[in-house]
Image (cartoon, rainbow, N blue to C red; front, side):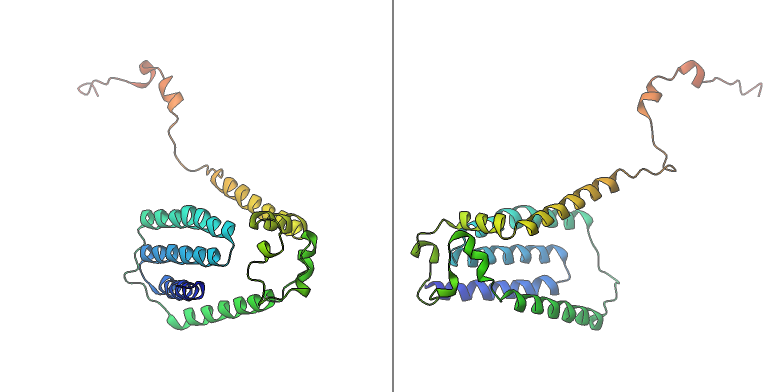
Length: 209
């Protein structure tokens, strides 16, 4: 099979699996179909020549996030029995989110060719139908080096902002776990071990009482 046929196969499976993720009532099955979506997306990236991003999808999304979701869902034991679902509201929210994503994707398609000038790539004069693997054709750096050069030069500020957002999320989760309530009764093992049994245990004569 050609790469075009494989691309369409992986794309169709990804779309069908994504529809199953949002339509299934069982959360465990939804996470399993989400793993299928990630695997097919990684295969598409591998066909496009982005090996680093492909393996990054498999390691990060499938190996960490999807497995974490699966274990969390299995431990929570979410039950949907007796829950009334308003499909009209869900459809409206889904339509709104899809419209916003469509606008974002349409704006992202406007490629900023100046961002590639830092690594010596002049895409404004490139013949896209003739260049299939532009890294090998122009003797440019590898896939990982190209991503690193663009990420740490043209998009360095955005990279720092993303790191700062992740830092805030980590600090926020730590602060939430350190919030101690005063009204909660807890056992203090150290004080219990140092207590004198003569002052704690008392014997009463029930006949005299």
